[in-house]
Length: 129
Image (tube, helix red, strand yellow):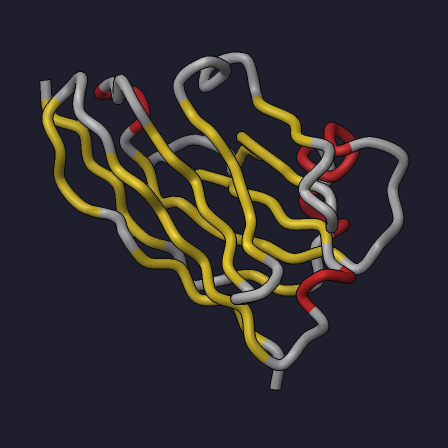
C-alpha cells in the first residue's frame, strides 16, 4: 500500500530552523512530483513548495521564497523541506503529498491540491514569537 509519512515538525523560536522529511513507500517515488502543503487553524490548505520528479524544477509560494528549500533524494524515497528564518505565521500543520500526474509546471502542482494522489497525516510546526 502506497503511503507518505512526514516527520521533523516541532516547536521552534522565531528566527530558528527546522527540516521536515517525508518518506514514501509502496510507490515508484521517482515517477512522482512531490509537494509540501500547510494549513493553519481557520485557514485553507496552501501549497507552499513543489518539486518535479527529477528535482530539476521547483516552486515556492511567495511567503516562503528565500527561506524554505525543497529537495528530494530519489535513491532513498525521501522528500525534504529545509525551513530557515521561521516566523510565527509559519505555524501550521505541514503535509507531504505525491502526484503521478504530468503537469506542465511545479506551480501547477502546488496550485491544485487535487492533483495529488497520496497525502501524509501531517506534522505540526509551531513557531513562537
